Length: 290
Ligand code: AAT
Image (cartoon, rainbow, N blue to C red):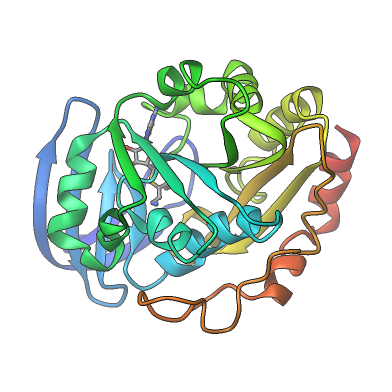
């Protein structure tokens, strides 16, 4: 460990640790669920860390939040009811709020401290909570989903932390079963699905579970996020039986301005949407075989 630097060390990426130079620690706390740190880095703006793992930085959060949101929502016509699991920083809400067709946005985040800290230190993300269509539920996403009536949502976005800690169950088969139940026919889910460089074993399990559960389409997409381990992160995109969804060809494109008062899109566009589904051969072989 280098003094004055933050290094992200975890058994989920043994033998490597990406580091950022720390200018100043702005917040340190311990919630019921995890240790929460916010620091000012010298080159990526403010950084949110949960249990030693980087959740977002001001500089590259656009890549993650825009992709995890617009990959599913641009793939179906007129999304109306959207559920976000995790995502307590508000960044995904900010992106969902770009859609005029959306009538209701529920969010279920386990940790109220993440929401409070985001409102204090990350106003450009927490702005997502100001949309009047948003209802915040503080609680476990697994329990929340079990109570959702069948066929409620057009889209569910699972913006979850890694499977060590409170998010573990969000990577397991029963969770995906409740997601499928909560979606309308032809509804879509997009979940944070780790890195093809580090976690092919986790991805294999998710893909094979999803192929059993989702009778529409099952796809893996990925993007670059420099401050996530290995610099890339992937998404599992699935649809339920019903009107077919072709994730690779967005039917509900966002225009260049990205619409509303929150300003233009920084990362997402329709070309990068389609490109996100092109996989390196080593990953394609494994994912296609599941
Ligand atoms: N948008 C920033 C990126 C994240 S945040 C993940 C969020 O999921 C955290 O706020 C965490 O508190 C919340 N969370 C974890 N478990 C649950 C649960 N069971 N129910 C509801 N919310 C939960 C993801 C960063 C990915 C990091 C990649 N290395």
